[in-house]
Length: 331
Ligand code: NDP
Image (cartoon, rainbow, N blue to C red):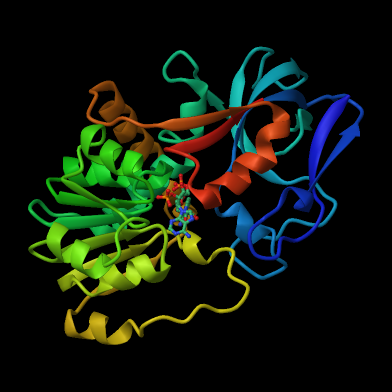
């Protein structure tokens, strides 16, 4: 038996369990040049929501009645491939299947003795790289500047804020619960943090937390939170548009304040990005992130759900903020 998760329906608004379909297929058999992989840790990520729509984007949409894919750490359980041996662990963009075959393309070996395997989906994987690349390549933080991070207690945000601290910024985080806000200052070293759910006047809260304005905004959420931050940007501010989770489930085009006058009067830069734009710099970035981890200058959180069956709900829960740090499913 080999369990598989298919896209059953394209979600309308917030994803539902009924948008996913569990199915069983036979355990695959490998041929020469292939490996048999057993999924160990599955990453669920907000960007997968966009792939569930039938819309043109930077990455193809998932097809209906076909398996969903995401970052997965898998164990090589059989190998007819010269580069992989039984017992290796690999990371790759793989299908939501308990077992699958691969010809090795796109697979990267990961070393569970250097870091927990799940870390290769988070701080030493896509989300860590996203924080590092967006912040350093576009944000270019300077010592003494004020950095605001939204989605700050999540996988990307918590790393972005800590890198900001390492670069000498005053860092203010925005997150959705008191527990997360407390964690930002106590565990991740942020200077201040705002709970956007319990704060009635975000504009005033940002003014208070950023008495010298905002030089750099690392935005994971968009929407009204970002509207409030934009009011406080300084001259030559950089707005790094990493994610916009507050509108991923929108069913019509959201409309907010017009951003152009803020950008003009502050000579500000606003730039979106996709982490893969910086592929060539990944090895150096991973080296830097690993060094910071080893030196205990960087730390991370994970929310680990258990069991292959838990994958769809774990994904849905990202939109309710039920994760602290990287949401991962241990199969
Ligand atoms: P997170 O770990 O940050 O998880 C998502 C978090 O978003 C939740 O925990 C929740 O935290 C917050 N959230 C959910 N709904 C809303 C809402 N309506 N308004 C505000 N916050 C909300 O996920 P990731 O770190 O993996 O991703 C963070 C962002 O970065 C996403 O937007 C993602 O799409 C983007 N991203 C972009 C990449 C790129 O290449 N540009 C690559 C990877 C990720 P809370 O409790 O604080 O609300």
